[in-house]
Length: 422
Ligand code: SF4
Image (cartoon, rainbow, N blue to C red; front, side, top):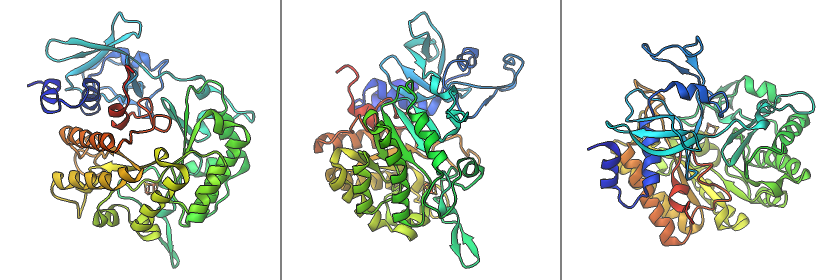
């Protein structure tokens, strides 16, 4: 049976558009030159694509830019992946959107689509001549992601004369590196340079971001109170420009102290997302040694529950890395055990007003490193069907002001909860 037909048979409770998105996340699309042409105006993937042998060069180049995000006719958003053996391809059609998604051995036209465009703010400069793209701001559809302190202190926990690496096992992006120099972030220091904050706030204030959500993130600090103070500096700067009214501002920090949550709320922050990454206690200690030793699992959970009291039950989430329990030394051996652990997390959190969000974990070691998720497509859909059923049973759907179909480019939760035809 072909891929989509197999999924329809196995997951009749999932809407067609969700099964299609999940299939595209896994199977990707075959390369077509029109994708490289679309990168002239679409928001580009940060990683260029190497054309495989046999594929003619594009404008004399074998390394080409491709669009980052597909935007469906019903506004479903999916990260674009290119895989040579995919049953899908994207190429121009005669629709108003400009492109069609074709599928299967008979190359059937499934739907029309386009790509998320490169918006004007990306090429604009701040008053001091800095490219807005270099201010620590990025975008996925509805959501701007603000990260002006990318270096994570869990990578360099002081221990005597040396430092110890207690970073999360899947994480590469928090590694302290030269991004910190450009932004002026200093390890173990709360304050960020005023110029850095001013520039990113200016970029957020660009009139053509077309975003409604502003998600504040950064590397973790070893002191929860210091981390709270750092987020407050940013939130107050946004508030001073009235941007807390234009955007739904959320703190995607580590677990915070309740007093700092209250201060953030006063500074216009409406939501919190303290990512637990993995639920099972033994796996939490293995996968997230920094979070486990510095904050502690119980304290992390308590902080999420306090966040519900401060921000309200529609305004708190925690993200998990789906399948990370199954990767590396000391991993769970059985994918179903991982799935049931994920469901246990949802059964704990959702009734308490905390939404659980699952991103796919792409293998970081071994032969298929970075190419294939650890969870199978079937497991991801089963997990999401069950999560959606829990949210429905509890009367707690994902708040689209916080996290919407047009910001979920690698996750499925809002796709289950929002009805695009409503
Ligand atoms: S807390 Fe973990 S996931 Fe977050 S930046 Fe640090 S190492 Fe990476």
